[in-house]
Amino acid sequence: MMEQIVNILSWLMLTSGGFFVLVGGIGALRLPNFYTRMHAASVTDTMATFLVLGGIMLQAGLSIATIKLVAILGFLLLTSPTASYALANAALLSGMKPDAKAESNSEEQAQ
Amino acid sequence: MITVFAVFLLSLLVITSIAIVRAQNLFVAVMLMAIFSLLMAANFFILDAADVALTEAAIGAGVTTVIFLGALSLTAENEKKVELSRGLAICVVAATALVLIYATFDKPKLGDPEAPVHQHVAPWYLSETPNLVGIPNVVTAVLGSFRAYDTLGEVFVVFIACIGVLFLLSARNESDQQSRRSSPDSIGLRHHLIPKVVGRLLFPFILLFGLYVQFHGEYGPGGGFQAGAIIATGIILFALLEGEKRALAAVPHSVLMGMVAGGAMMYTLVGVTSMAMGGNFLDYSVFSSDPVFGQQLGIILIEAGVGITVCGALLTIFHAFAARENY
Image (tube, rainbow over all chains, first blue to last red; front, side, top):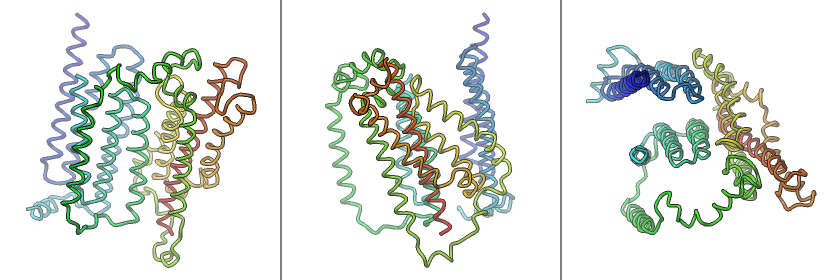
């Protein structure tokens, strides 16, 4: 019984994690400008990391693998938002404007 | 299940490599190369080659990307248009591809235990490693002890590559010197507070993990090559965050040169010592009254030599590219 609950919970977490990755991927492809795309990819990725690794942790149970997964989770939760921040900061410093006007301009250029 | 995953990864590899060939912007190509290396590392891991996967991830996705970016900052961002007829090139590539595909028909199936490569010396390595070397990771035993000559050759290849890069890059162009000189303090991410803080937080753990990979190589995947690359990525991260000058102050050029030469020297000296103690070149059994312990001692020593050389060489090449900007 207990095992079943853990299983169902872990599969729920894995599936919703996969869903978030999918949404992030679609967002990164479909959103109009650089900042919105990056936002879509980075925010969903952080959530998905948490869900997917949590799901695997429930599958692994109390073992050495879970401790390694916690370490990976900590590492990813630190580095992945930092990487997104560095990317956005680099884009801003290189003169990419995050306002709506620049967005419409870039769309006009693209067309 | 694993086959589905492998096929998925391999098709991603093909897509990435086509994208690399088609990319006109070199920056995009470098980023795609990093993705390619990461996919390759995952592929190696599926094929149960964890040691190779570690190397590919650390060197391919980590160090080479930074070195490529360093090289890119010295050149143009876009690929030069080449005015060549592509017909001949496509013919040659297509013919080679067909010959290679024809050759794979004679190949044994993947993982076939009857394949010649698994019937040659591999069974002997697998059966004798527990008796002769006594360590769980057979890969380390093969690389460090049974085939120590090959590894010595690889270390010298790294050594020579490092010298070659230094020779090519340290040639100064006097007329260029004034125009391109910028203050070295401006390198580094001064405006990037968050990456700097997180980088400082992660830096000791990267070094610790590198040392773990170095000294745990007898028991799990890892060893000198991987550890050297991981420690080098840690120090390159430090150099990216704090500026190249501070990284050079922490690990000066003289130390790096000493590491590159010293590691290779250490490896050779282990071999010479074993000769002096009455064994063959790189036969570690003579180091101790217990031959198994002697083997383990020898492997630890030569892995340390490999790690020191690889770490020193990667850092020297990185600094050679980074310093080139200031000439």
